[in-house]
Length: 150
Figure 1: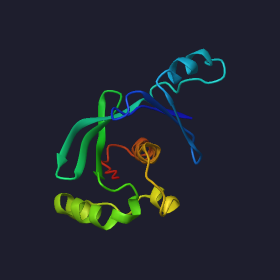
Figure 2: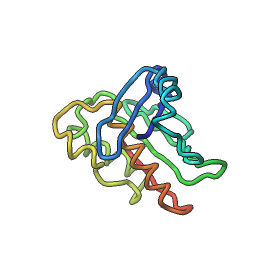
Figure 3: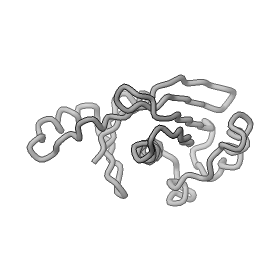
């Protein structure tokens, strides 16, 4: 289980299970996990985070961050959101065109989370699943930059 936080949702805590559901709880979930330390144990040295800058360009929200694991930078994350759209598949072509305008050939393909959603509403849990996938890729690689896009 991965416990994650997102500065866009400061009152929420996300608990993600590998290949499983994403649970959204309030920020006190961390306190509960400390009380359950007899059953769950932190993986020491596995803290990974993305910190960066948030930009708004017209209807697009772009977040570019440096992914760090411990004291060292391990990669770059790029998150792109088209704010007026809540069904991600409806605006994927527009997102791709926008990303290609500043990322060129480094723009990624459609994220795996979209394959499961089809015409359903995109949520914060979907973003966290993508961050978990990105972080897992970075953990497995040694000093190779990876881009993750929403």
